Image (cartoon, rainbow, N blue to C red; front, side, top):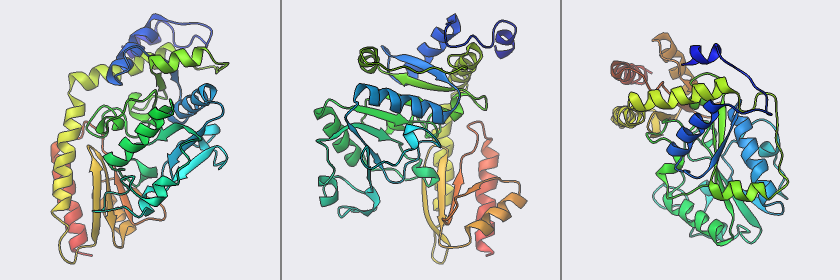
Length: 334
């Protein structure tokens, strides 16, 4: 499909459209559950987040944004700004109502201090937690979502890491009772090709058309990028990769959990689908080096005793078994 598009047209510039854009947009809107929405095809996940943030601020120019202290939204632009006059960062890890290790449930003094009377946009990264893989409780997200709806606000989701089947669902927000107005999608939706998508609901699209929002760059809505998105979605459906991510993720989590025994350096295992973090009491860097010797590439989170596991959704089940055996052998011999 990509080869066919290469022989037709790769790039049109932002002044022109192409039939493949509509095909790709319909598929994206179907999996995001935004059937009456619209899409903008861009180049990177950071750009998709930036597009959504700018669009949300165009609709709600006076509103503050609410997000979590452990979230990451890109390396540039308004999405990466840390201006306390515009952004309220809530630390859900250190609240006084964290019972059972699930984090804040919105029943604490800290939550009551969030200035919801000023907040009109909820910017949510559902679980990546800047690479540490932490999942806010369903109760907390339900309470925030309710407050945002009461204020007729907008929910913007950063699915750059958690999207495209990574968490065992098409998108990370689908683990919660959420109906977002904007979704930023990157990474997996291009399977290595530099394409991203900003998907907007019908409500957000209508509001945006009544604002003075403008965005344009050279490789916006390129036919080749849209073709890649179409092919990725079709392949994931044909090969049932979202369900496979859920199943293999459960297998990997079960295998890792079995190693948390007395005297083990394993402190915590966190994950959904094939997005997993292994937290150690010590020696995470050493474990990483030993895994590399055995042929397994994992990420060590800087400043933390945490290894991040993000295998391809097409990983062989035998490789999962070999990884579990190898890491068990490594930590046993430390």
